Length: 120
Image 1 (cartoon, one colour):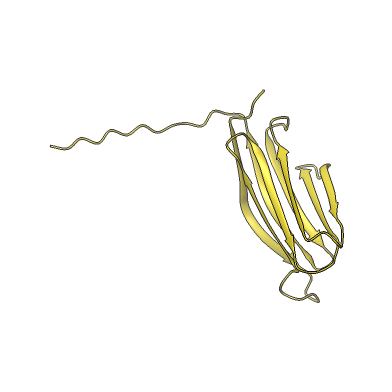
Image 2 (cartoon, rainbow, N blue to C red):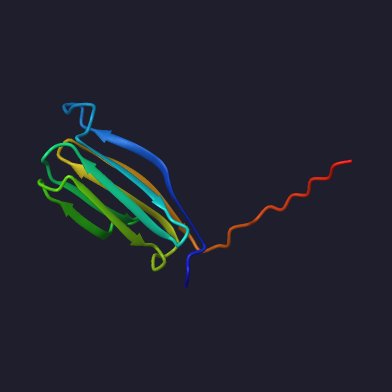
């Protein structure tokens, strides 16, 4: 069953521990492609391990990858066609803090709005 609609990144809140600096030594971008894949890219500016975790609403880990200290860039495509409809969480984290992005997968068809513009 192919997922017709997938929306990502409703919220991109960065969580910090009050004792850590306000900036992270990594940045991440993620979006859903037209062929229903999550494209994630992580760019690091320090030699520190970073973990990528995709969880469902019950906090079960569906995907996990550790980016090593020596890797400065990481990119991956995650296929969401096999995910059940619902809410998911994508977390990119290090010992400094984490970036959490929300994902909502829905197989309901996207409604198209048709508009007619008439000019006299």
